[in-house]
Length: 195
Image (tube, rainbow, N blue to C red):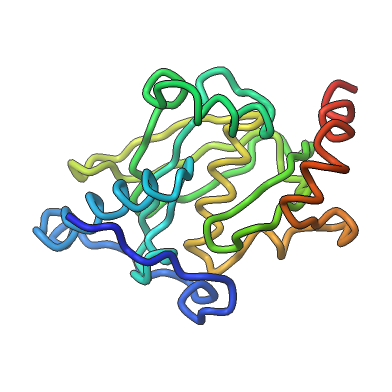
């Protein structure tokens, strides 16, 4: 068990499509160790999700924390620091996922990323998706997600295709350093979400 280094934007591993995981590999001790290390790394970095490429392993697996109350992003960060994460999130390990858009209308949230530290950007994504994936027992699963949960899934699963959230920012003026986001944008963003 170990906390692994999180790769930062610019590292080539973050920009390639990750390899599928075989059933044999899924049951291997190395894979079980990877999952444990990803959980520990996510906890150490105070993230709500992490994908294997972020810890240097180009494989199709991600841990996704689905907010139970579907809160706005700024509030989510505060809640996750001040309460038991198990009450706020359902945690899924998603292997070899396939995303299907079920509602192409978009919604937008300010996103951050462990691989792009110190920045936040406003990203619009499809409102609702279905994710078909394999669980840790090797069984096929499917989950529908909408709103913020759909955004979390899409953000994490983009990593498996070599895509970072900054690639999806349509309006480049909506990319900010964290300090400036907190000072100038957070309250304005909350007002926009209310509309």
